[in-house]
Image (cartoon, rainbow, N blue to C red; front, side, top):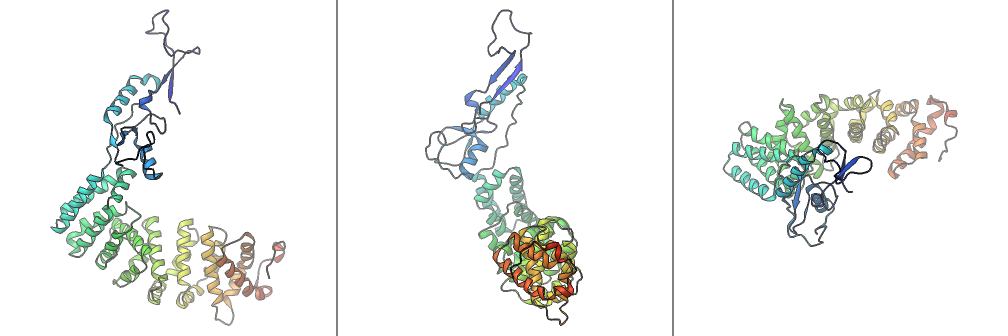
Length: 444
């Protein structure tokens, strides 16, 4: 793409009879961008010119995409292998471009702003070392100021965030969090809060950082934050807990061993502070009740607190993402006799679950069918109330339609089994006229 600007020819300032360069027959003058002001990759005017180790200058956004996103290790122009992936700001070219923009503002060209210099690997390495030193000397005030600097860098640009993560800052911050969480929490609350807040900007967390954050002392501190009245602390704590338990199911036991860990998670769902925190809390709850090493105890606690009823009320008008997570938790609760017992006693269970089939997303449909299958398959009451309630809200037709449109193999198995369970009771219990669905093919 070649950039050019046009302006109408003006009579003032031109000598009579002298031909003006660039004036076209239509009375317009065209200005073309100098070649050395264009990025060799995009051919657009450079806004933040940087020079590679090969001596070629590019616009920072384009060359960083070439290197980091596309995975190239050579210079696009010379095809030489790069000896360094740290581009150097070319202030000379940038000032020349700015001066050229000012000189030609009559063409509608705006002066490019002076770009903020991004953080370098050396700067991240130095601040990591300083944070480690501050931790060893128990200088919580100094550590807090250093962490605040990392937070500021992270907020400035995605490029800064990538540089900070790539140079091991997450691990350093997580280790600092664990260190200060081992001593008096009241005294170290400010630095702990600052670290946790910064970590939420560096998601997804991985590697050694999760090991430090998944320690008993670190998770105990997060639960302590969950119990506090500060909304920001509670939000940040549950977001980091979601990262921990989602990466390693063994951390669920560490969380459950902490006294009072379940109640604040339930409170975040019952008294939401923001959608992000509610979704994160649902994920943590799902992990605690579906972990291979988890016992029936957490399920019983959540059921006794009224989680089944709360989830059903939430599902009535929940948005897609929240709906999927709420259904996943409800599916986990219905995996136990205790959870199903509470679900049977709630009049909303079948109307809400059947309505979500084919209405929200494929994932929501799979969870809904799984819940319905668990409730009907494990029905032990002689009057088979579950069958009656499912049929009366149109479950049979919904399931039949689902088979026609297609679904995952596991869901298809559940649907087929449900249809066989419900079919013998249709004549006596179903409230929908079967003629409305006479064109649907039946697989049995």
